[in-house]
Amino acid sequence: MTDDEFKRIKDLIEDTIAEYRCPPCEEDEWLTTKKICARLDTSEPTLRKMRRNGGIRYIRVGQSYRYQLP
Image (cartoon, rainbow, N blue to C red; front, side):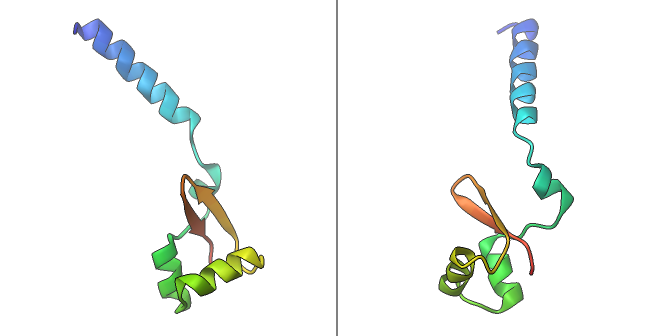
């Protein structure tokens, strides 16, 4: 692979990654499931119930969720 080919591939990867920014994640603190459970002193089933009932703000990132403190 030449340096020119390598640079083109690198540029393509960087451009693709730049398209998938997550602006809400950059504005506020979004916590993982484990971290929000620890902060709220609650279990994962209770957290799922809160999510279903609209009791907590969340976003889906891939196959996982991120939460904001109420």
